[in-house]
Length: 365
Image (cartoon, rainbow, N blue to C red; front, side, top):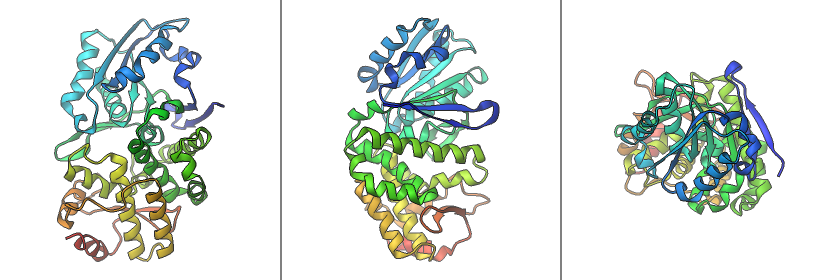
């Protein structure tokens, strides 16, 4: 498969995103990053036996090998994305006496990427790291843009840092063994990009959803490329989410409330975002910002990706308001939401009729 490359344009902190089938086995792509370096690979307990061994073989086959190559496997699951588990990375770095010229490689999904990136940002006040995302969700979203961090019992991703990687290396081959539930979770973020920024991409997704669900290589490669391209453009315009970058959170305010209420890991992040996007579309429709036909079109696409379109049956409106009040977009006590003003056009706003939101949540009980 042809190598697809794009760049996240952040001046002297710009970095490439490479997308290719079997990229992990293409050792030439790794030489410039790891030659002569102290390298720590952060992965999880599932990938430790599935992907890590062949990846280590590739690195050890390089003409110029890493000076030191160590690994740490974190427990697998969103419920372990916390400060306690984060210390496993620091323990490995310190136990093996890694210096500030070392390189951290995040080999895994969003949890691994967020935690390895945060550890890299904090260790000796900042060391280099590379994202090697292994789930569709991490390939199209969490690995790009420099958001790193961990969850707290009182809120999701409330402890972290903006810290950009040196590169994002995406191997589409690893998606072949991804569980169907994880594939659907990743498609939630893909659909999000069409809804917020590109109606033509939304139409492409409608025409190619069956191919994506069947994991057809070319369809996946294009979906990943276009998703990363949209995110890279938004991040370049607003790296630290002071404004437009927040549109990337369509459905996330509702979704994070679901994750917090259900317990991290009970619903996958993408599943919560799927239901959250459906709720955001419905509110946008109630406000008169999208038509009923547009709302139906969006929700139908979410449903075709085998994502939930309704919140958990045990969540009340009060549960949602409690969770949504913890959202990072809340400013001066005022809730801001990402909503649609037409398909392909999103806004971040507190300027909406709150009675419409109250009525939506009241219907939940």
